[in-house]
Picture 1 (tube, protein in one colour):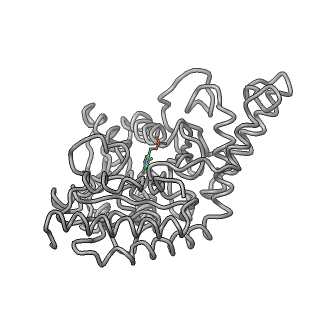
Picture 2 (picture 1 turned 180 degrees about the vertical axis):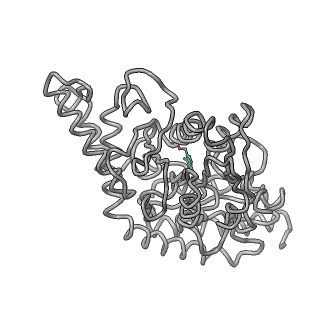
Picture 3 (picture 1 turned 135 degrees about the vertical axis):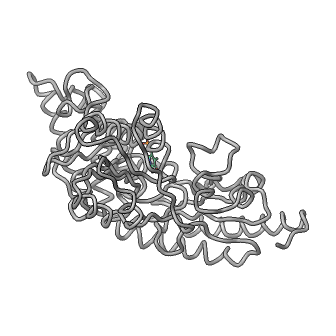
Length: 389
Ligand SMILES: *Cc1c(COP(=O)(O)O)cnc(C)c1O
């Protein structure tokens, strides 16, 4: 078994070998290397064909039309484009109030805070102690000048699933734009922009076995939504995102989306049973509890509190497991997770919490190894500190 065992799929996933193969075929002289915008020769036409096939594959994953997909460098850029783009496009005419939640990814919180510093008003909804935002909460926060609601589908630290379809219906009935950060859900759970009444949706390829540095933003055409671009030059992607399209990255994301669509329901079931095995085998340890809603969650993400043990020390002792204390983006800071704090976990318990996330290449042997490693480490640390909780 390769050590440490990788159980940090929520931070990033390895590229599926079938995806890597296709990407490799889009790089060299022998492959599909041309500029998709070149109109005068076959190299360009073939590259364009690969890009358009990928556009269909990504659109199919979320129930969209190919023309509604805008390529970006990842979900961070997609979130920025959606939020800043909508405010720039509609702020003057419709109002400058945004509703989001306090436990969004930084790639939503930071653009919102930036806009706040430029005169927009932002309501940061507080989740309940299970980590969920309710439709009713959003309804209460709506104002005549609300232009955008931005809510994540699945939270990247605790894995809970927000009621996006209900929020979408509410927003549509009030003519308010609805953006969803689906970086953690797309390719794992069914996502349908029609059924969920979503106007803008962010995707990240490296969260579903595609390459890093690649993403997409769904921008609705019926009724038509516009976003002002962040990047000008050349007018690619219907003017919303200029720059030469990265054929290999795009083809990789397309292939990853196609594989996810074919395999996601089997994969979800398989991962759910591995998660049940893992959680079922450590939950009886003294002081162990689960952060976030026990059922309304993605099975691949477990955020576990080990009361009385220091998370950093536990992480170091669990050296044969590649896991994290929170999100990869904030793991450099010594502050406890803002997500856990917002759902009412006290500072100490937040410092005692670890995120374990499973994925496509997690197998039973790895999970059994993780169980033994966690059990023996926790028991040893408790013996040393003399704590039984
Ligand atoms: C990973 C992640 C992002 C950032 O995606 P990148 O493609 O790495 O920029 C945004 N939101 C959520 C919920 C994520 O999990």
